[in-house]
Image (cartoon, rainbow, N blue to C red):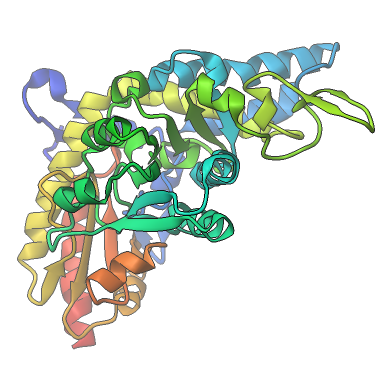
Length: 419
């Protein structure tokens, strides 16, 4: 096995057979514009192993029926498969109860759900919400909406030049008026791993609750919501080898119980009359309407695939890729890395003097190399660094050192053309 397809991090037990893993992902076998696909856009969405694709096909071929309340065989089998994922997720993030696992369309819906239910119920005039300067728009806009409605104050933890949270200022921002702190675990634009455990402990000391955006961290880091003691945690299936349109909001049951409903309709009710409606128990209280059944069924094999490989081995491989790519990029004339935090995960963002990111993205695509360019739904963060956007290469367990070599060489050629 070549060095390009096997990376050893800290011992023989850390070795992953990347060539074998790549064979599990059908899309990685395709050609793009006459070149083998080099997929380095994993922070936007990850590719799917055959087990996930097969689960989708199996559901629609053999199980397709609406879940819950049905008494026929297909309904019962579909419901069992749908609910099995909830138990796997509970174990994956170590929630105390399966009822604390709320199905959503993704991280964005989870963040909005907390803002529009917990936020609207608890925020009053003069109360304060703290977010960070590296948030995705989905963890900015909902809080702006609710703060404007309630005349509450939105405060922002500033970012250092290295792309880290200024924790000294964070502690200064915390006060008795702070009601909730909502921060990203791993920045989608920088790769920075934030010290969320310390943030949670400090916020709780002031009586505030904490919501963690785990969209980027769930694939790359071990998640234990009980150890973190976070009050809410949101994630997306498609960032972790699963289907799009499926996500999870974890919430402590005591908080979820007292929160008002988010959407009204079927499934989230116990009884409806024209005079009064009584609501369903957790988790169904927040799951109105026919859910995205097939994709939740297919989310289970995605988690099982991650578990089979092992988070520690995945992280070791991705760290090796990031380190290698960072050194390669630093060798390239005119490149400036945006985000050089001490603790990073799987994201390399950079700009090139005198070259627009989009032009680089187009030329790389001509070589079959997929990267993301732009502001990455983090415009305030781009403004902090006085740039319109970055070129972002993001890595997953199926990427190789050889792909990074191709990326680095194509980047040099693209820069030469554009200059």
